[in-house]
Image 1: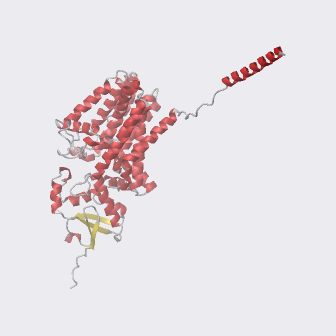
Image 2 (image 1 turned 90 degrees about the vertical axis):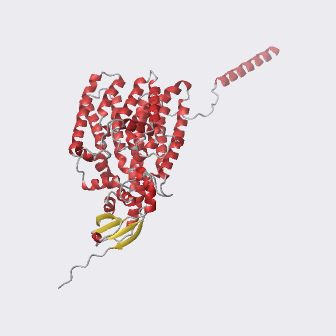
Image 3 (image 1 turned 30 degrees about the vertical axis):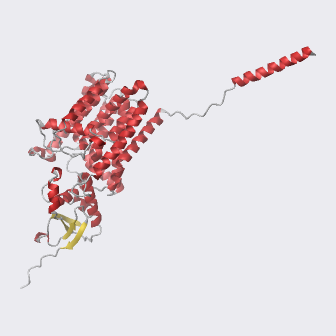
Length: 527
């Protein structure tokens, strides 16, 4: 009995041990984990962040109307171009967009924002091609799309040339960096098409053939292989320069006088121009920056030194020296054509140079933080801080006023407001076919005196007349929206020369103040 009990006890013990071991082998339920994102999904998330950054910094762009060169390009799109100069950006783009959306400035702004965001994606891809981490590449792209010096490229619809030219150039660089044999016929054809499209959008990429050599050098390929692509692109650049000269764009054949917008300057002024562009590139923090006037700054030499320090820091890493050198060279080569234009300095000239410099800055941040495993977190924090800083600064630029509490200091915003007010108010004015308009300027001698103290706003003649006349492109904007208008004239007072005109008096901000039909002079009496 005791043995049986022992055997029974032992058998029960074996069975309980077997159950215990089976339970031990059974996998324990684990806590739920978030699904790991693929590389494509992470890239898509970075693109989404870029789009949010663009919308956050520039969302107020939809408030603004066409102005100045926008009207000129719309007129060219309707009447046809006189030359091939900027035919993609001043004819094809405006004609296609108007055909789809009509004369709707919000739609044009939406297309500009989308193109700007697309350039940001290309900058992100260039940074990734340079081996920067995904977070650091996002930082590089956000530095580009949210850089406050590029505000005019986004707010001015006619600046689409800067955006398109940059997009085609970046696409060409990406192709050169990825293709196994870009010098083959099909590759040369694609490369030539991208470069031609870039040139026909804006001529600031005229030195892009030089970049071809540096892409081959960056990839460690024999430079002899670059001769074919360089020769093809150089021929295109030379042909474009010939058309530019024979078409007498900006009066280049007459050698413009000193001080004219597109006269080329040599001498000490070049240093002033270069240091001004360095200041606009690096002085982007809101506490350090004043309103960005489009004038050269003779006291900006410290920013030239700051740029040199940045370049040295970028070149310190042996592992990335060639990649960083490529970014620096891109910046300088693309800046070189505009530095001599000392009478015509503009922030949007930095659009193309910054597209090459920002990937190098992203690579610098990535290498500095790579070993700490904090590159992603720090890059994300820098993205948030920079985008927020740009949001504040662009808002300040937009709202900056002069003379009174309403007039905008920057013509990009002021003239868009003036043109929009005038066109909207003229919709309420009865204008039959073959109407002749004369826009009568308000005379404000006290405020004219205040404006005279502001060097950027001295334009010759009564300022209010000049400002509105420039805003509507000498009447082109009015004739676009009101085809029944036959003539548009501008004056500070009416006289006999305006008999039979409709006189429209306006306020400084383009609001219609008075409307008067000027009678025709009585004809000779019958004998």
